[in-house]
Length: 156
Image 1 (cartoon, one colour):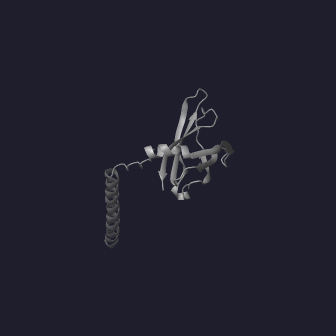
Image 2 (cartoon, rainbow, N blue to C red):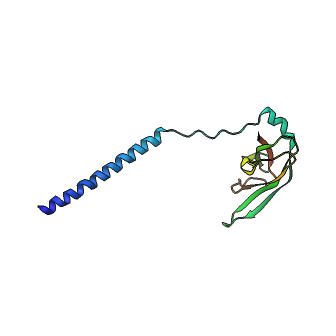
C-alpha cells in the first residue's frame, strides 16, 4: 500500500504541471490569434515638394556588377554615386529598381534606399556612393541596367 500511495503522490503534481502548461499554451495561442496582423510600415511618398527637388539629386557612375557568393550563386549589385546639387539636406532617398526582360516587359520592381538617416543623410553639395545587392533576380531579366526611379525623398 505504501508504494501505491507514493506513486499517486508523484503523478498528481506531474498532472497539474501538464494541465497548467496546456492552459498556458492555450491562453498564449488565443492572444496571438486575437491580436491580428500588424500593419505594414508606412512607405514614404514623393510629395510635391520632393518632386520639385528630384532634379537636384544626380546619379553618376552607375553600373551593374555580378559576383559569385560563397554558396556559388550569382549576386548582382548596382553601384554608383548620388550627389545632392540642391540647397537642402536630405535624410532619406529611396528608388525603385525596375528590371525588364528581353521584350521590355517589367519582371521585377523593388524599392530600396540609397540614402538613409542611419548613414547621416546627404548634405547639399555632398556625393555618396551606394551599393544595392540583389540575390534573387528573375531568370527572364535581360541582364541590362535596370531603370532607377526616385520613389521618395525625406528632408532633414
